Amino acid sequence: MTKREEYEMKTEQLLLPIMEEYQFELYDVEFVKEAGTFYLRAFIDKEGGININDCEVVSRRLSDLLDQKDFIPDAYILEVSSPGLGRTLKKDKHFEKSIGEEVEVKLFKAIDKQKEFTGYLDSFDDEKIVIADENDNLTEFERSNIAVVKLAVHF
Image (cartoon, rainbow, N blue to C red; front, side, top):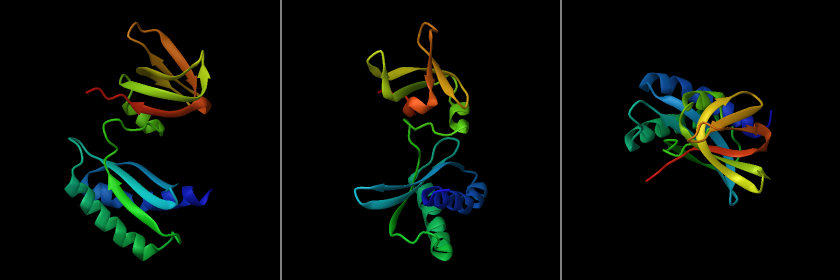
């Protein structure tokens, strides 16, 4: 297990009782380095959506617990937010909840000179995801070739 994975797992364990108490869903936790700065991000959700007050409550509670446990030796910025409308689908639970939803798929390696695809999430397993276009034509993608899958957002 990498340090990143360890930090994310331990943070999830700290967050779960808070999520249960407030009836929130823990969408994801990530520990990343961007432009030389570490960020510990918790993405939370609830029926009807998360608001700024929800994020503040969770941030304060989590910050106190992180200070007590002190398992991340590096300086970092804690962020608690909603996963957003165009949320990234990473885990099987994300894909499961999004069956039938319109998604954007970006690939590492082009297929027929194309790296970005849009369609409706039809199915998935450990090896691949399948999207359907408006005519129900299916396109299959190997998960190992997928850079990111996000819910499509139209304004």
